[in-house]
Length: 145
Image (cartoon, rainbow, N blue to C red):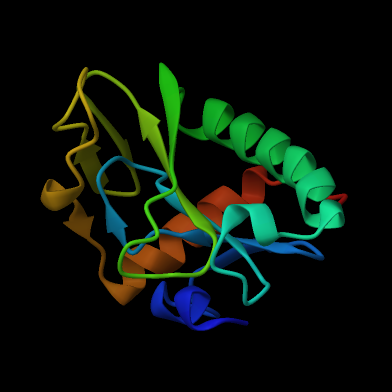
């Protein structure tokens, strides 16, 4: 796994792993269910990904959207490819909604709604909260990958 994946807490934050991608729980939650979708390769430009990674990406995104729609019921899902501090190809996946959402006492409001996500106002999770949310989201995840 590349350095960017490790920075986002891998392996402790791993929700799902595919041949070319990993889906991680974002340790700082601007909205409940925020994820990091990261390419496992060492490339630092989206255009440098192998064709098989692009093909698999559609399958991974379909799973993400199915899970988030069931678990969080967002009005929208934002995919942010920022890659400023963390150079390897990755997206911040931010489910968007008016108001707040909660699970197991973990409540997160969408402070940026309906504008851009308020990443600076994200709730930083404890290790226990990370475990709870990972277990919850894994429970929704499609069994076949």
